[in-house]
Length: 261
Image (cartoon, rainbow, N blue to C red; front, side, top):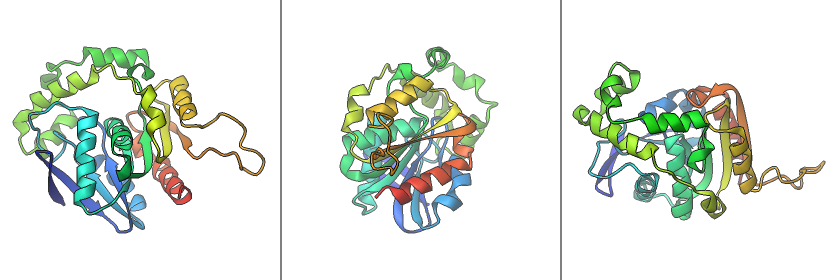
């Protein structure tokens, strides 16, 4: 367990195992503990670095909005500070958005990329999900206090009194009408897209994302010679909210990392 001073932020991270580095980036209003069930499988033969992003887990808030590109800058600085040229990066939900921006804006720091349950534009989520984002306000902070999310925050945050500020920043982030369509082509790292079969992301958007990465555009051929460089996994019996708990996820990630040079 350690802290790194990056971009005015005291960034918490912890390491497990040894070998090629794999950075894990958690979802919103959560912390790196969500990856605990995956750690034994992922840390077998790898140096896994689990990060608490700004205002999450054991990393305190600072006077800065929550924006994927800013959080990506923090992770790039951490990778450099750890003495690594680059690392494999897995991001889920908010962490996936951060991993996306990291691969676009700091490609020299990303070896291989795993994006779990993210859209590349806001309207890629189902309409009812976008409506829920629009309805999420800072007032939700008080209503969420009985929730496991708040209990985790109260237990681990350096300043639990920042909860309302954290929710206010999250509310602002959820209303950002982002569209990264043009940035998908800027991703040079080999990429694995992972989604739940009952995801908050529309199936047609998932297919569009994979196609923009060169996947599903033609038959691979009997010998697989035309297989795309990037991969897509749909995990059965999962949703956006529990896909990271599926035992199929570490298997898909390990398989991808072993095959993608």
